[in-house]
Image (cartoon, rainbow, N blue to C red; front, side, top):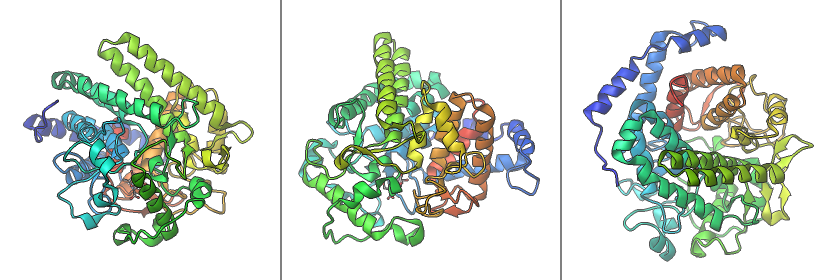
Length: 477
Ligand code: 9WN
């Protein structure tokens, strides 16, 4: 297992050099897109300042083992947050980026699942709901690594993609620390858990059993499957409203259902063969799994496993085919989640999850998908980032969590998709607008796609990390 030293003097030197890097390219882009001097982040000085502030957010959110999404609202380690955060950390401290992922994988369960939260025991229980005592059960204590406190749900599997990018940022350090050798078998077990335990329909796709597993918690895409969930009196107290405005967070009835679903899973021993009330095949979750499976192939090849690399590439292709086959609606030119407890119907609601398959390189429907994204529902290129929900819908709420605001991780994914499909100008414009908005919003958790106003919490981990990654795109892989 790689060692876990604190930040070394090498790390500090490296951070300093990068902070002082010439950012002329960013500056000229801002000019090309007509941003004036009165806008923040338009001068080289401002760009350096922005980078320094982003680094400071990551420093302030670092716990010594990993990075919290937010000191206030989310004071523990989250699974897909850590992957996004590692993508930014790699430009500043490649060693710390490796450690970010390693600390998460140390919490992997014996069945291969990667828990969505790793609790920091130094943080008081009443800082976040559901706390560890809510998740804890005999099954959890049996399956989770001894001494570590985790949740029992999962989040989108973007980790292999992040691990490969982290390795590429400093291959020499990665080899010296044995990073890929350590993480590859764990990533492979994580993907195997999804194939063996979550392929509810037998079509190769993984199902999620809770909206939190999508990472897009209260998207209107889950309204119908969630409405069937029987609630129970858990007697819990929400903690999120201490740190964020009520009208920007999920409703109380959503929370009742979230808690009931999680408690059911816990009381059924976190078994995946029990009769889940909520089972959905989610486009984003599966597209990120396919992209990560491709990255696993790259990792296997790097480690000398050419035969394994072929297997991973084939799995990625099969998964891409299943996503298109099952979740693509050709008439509406969009990907929809499939509600397995609702007769296997596609939930015809335009959430940003349906845009995420754009990240797949061999996507046969990239052109019609892009047309939908540029159309009235998402207005890609005309608004800030990608709205998390259909702008034309009566359910669109520009400031409430996943029901309208633009999130930076989704913007980053769409930027990657645009680059992969050689939509370079659109990718550049999106990149510029995301960087600019990260600055003006103080690294907000999410923003109103029409005005750019900050919502949720500020100094959010992945917003800062992905801003650094976007600023460094020309040097990154
Ligand atoms: C529940 C940490 C997480 C993100 C999710 C986001 C939000 C948690 C919550 O925060 O979810 O997992 O308490 O609302 O929806 O994507 O990983 O940043």
